[in-house]
Length: 221
Ligand code: JCE
Image (cartoon, rainbow, N blue to C red; front, side, top):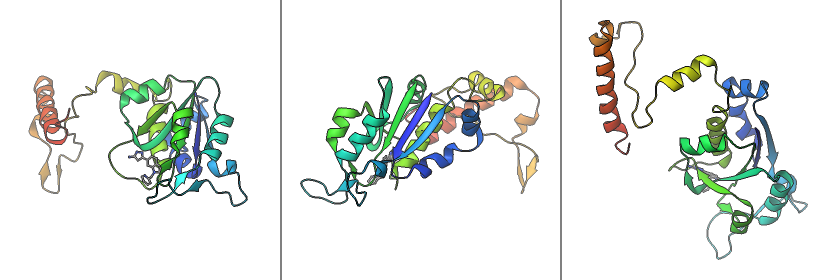
């Protein structure tokens, strides 16, 4: 898979993708990631890429000219073009699975208040938000999406990690609480049942804890 990231802050998008499991996937040739600065496609001598919103209001909007030049330069026939935006569909694991099957992703990050909507209509395949909270910079959202997609590429996770992934994880249930040594820490003990050696009872306890935790923290599931 190839991923191109178009942003005013390529180094912010690339930093979290340059270490650990994702860097190993890059080294193994599973994914080829390229950052691009939108300012490189600016069409004036001040390298301007934004202007105030038509109709008034706060902030600045990314102009269509630089975005059109950049996207048409970077996209090919088979490219899926994704815009990171607070107005996008909420990002879910199903999006990550679907995008992990593509051969080429072009991730476009706006900045400031938004992107001229003519670009959204003519060149963007889908708009995605990483969740209902406010960020300062769309490049952070792009890094989150890329991480979730790249770890799904065949071979990206070590064998041990993929096996754990397959044997556990019900998508509608949070994991039970977990503990490790020491058995007593700061006056707090590990639940007796986990030390009992009774695997049937442990499995049942974990199931009940998972249900209670899901009800508490994720009633929507
Ligand atoms: C983004 C910004 C609103 C001013 C481009 C944020 C947030 N939860 C979120 N998912 N995706 C985002 C996101 C995506 C792209 C951009 N910002 C920051 N947002 C108003 C600035 C800029």
